Image 1: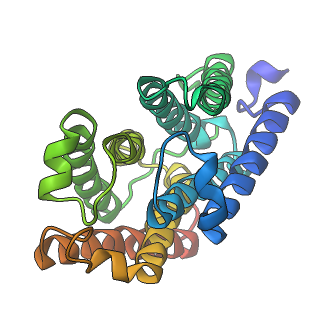
Image 2 (image 1 turned 180 degrees about the horizontal axis):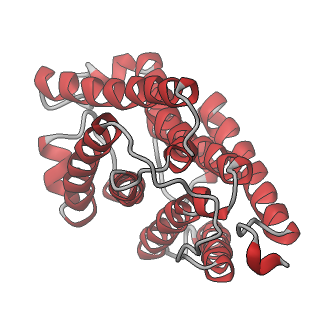
Length: 278
């Protein structure tokens, strides 16, 4: 009988996503609310603003897990495990490249968590399959060009920045990142950018609003929390020694984060209010 119904998450995959969401929620809240006490939990030295950015990432992933659980069928939330697995895998590689005798236990703990999470999310995708069957609950109606343009804009921006930050971190640091961070830190941020690039590229081709709605909570939460972190640590951004390369760089980043956060929120409200697709 199940062969004739839309594919949904089973009991154990839902439990895995729930546990993963709670771990990310705990990490995210700890890093974001109390960065001073959380600095020692990261494998290399980071400052409070960077810790809050990491917290924003983990909180966004928690929202992504919840969105996957709430999606109406596996096909509407399937991109979110891919996003999480991409971020976890790249971050594990970055941490592995920075492992030394001084931080070996902490690095191994993080690599283990990130690797297990990556494997679990990929296992989720493998178990439920990526391809869509005729009976899966996905509409094929027309949708406005607004989501497509919005997501394609994000894809181009985060894709270019993410590649530069991962493979040319020194150049990225000197030219367009709004405050001074260590090379592995900017590569960790690049992991999120590249994971987001995959998600927004995929979303730009979707005609089912349920798939777009599943992605928007994650898309809106990180930039909103990042802007809050920047506001709290504005003294770092304007510092002559640690701050932005220029006022223009700062303005561009604030605009981009505001555009993504506000745009995702408004698009979410618009799609929620629009008539249901057939």
